Image (tube, rainbow, N blue to C red):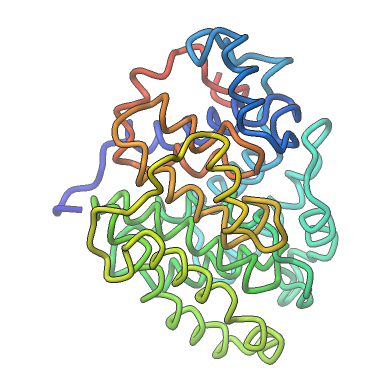
Amino acid sequence: MAGTAPPLAAYRAAMVLSGAGDALGYRNQRWEYCPSGPQIHAELAQLGGLQGIWATLPDWPISDDTVLHLATAEALATGLEGEPLLQELARRYMTAMGDMEGRKPGPTSILGTSQLRPGEPGGYQIPFNPHATGCGAAMRSMAIGLRYPRPTELRTLIQISVESGRMTHHHPTGYLGALASALFTAYAVQGRPLAQWGAGLLQTLPLAQDYVRDAGVATEPNMEAWGYFPDKWAWYLAERGLAEGHGPPRFPSSYGPAERDEIYRTFSLEGWAGRSGHDAPMIAYDALLGAGDSWDELCSRAMFHGDRPRSLFLHLFQFEFIFLNMGEQNCTEYSR
């Protein structure tokens, strides 16, 4: 951010693109649960490619991810701060769960929101969950980076992303995905070079660990489970030659849909690419690094393969110009 805020149109584009990416990659559950990137690409070709899709209801709804992301954005737009904001986030997440017919929210999000008690002291906090490693928190946190994009707001971004994330995914592998999504969005607003994002995340994680330790909520299990997220990200950055934050990224010589299916699985926790809090933003970052300025290539890498992270990729600001070329038909039910 060179002293001026991005235009309102850029914020609007980021929100609409994230919902459009979600609807396109979700395809009313059909593609979200398809494990084969080549099969998805073949079906996409049968539809006439991206320009052949008219993403309207009932065939192209948004998923639970966008409903909850909108809840995040609406809470942030109230202007509340601190615990009142956290209580508002909890309230809106609970309300959003009433709009999940046909959207397949994850069991961790269902459980977590059922444990929230907004309005009570500490009612935005739930118990630590050793199984809450999924990507749900990462998928709804990009707007936090829009609200707190400045480097001087980093500690607030950490607080809000961590606490909003562990309202459902109270495990570091889950809620640090929320931090990564928010942080990468802030970097996009700042215009920070893509090659630096991953290294910047690793540099931020010790601050997040300090925050969690100082907050004193389930400190011991959080610290015991902390290491996987930074270790896996350090591994990924070494694979891409970006450990020091300098490009260009290093990719395999052959990296089409079938190859990406296999390589994305190496990112994963249990063999399901994009399912977890660490690898949803990792796949998003990988797609952004490799897509250049091509809308079709970005969608190919980001949305049309068998995993969850669709909305995160299209939220980022240096791709705002793609909004003009994506096709007016590919908006979302919530943007009309």
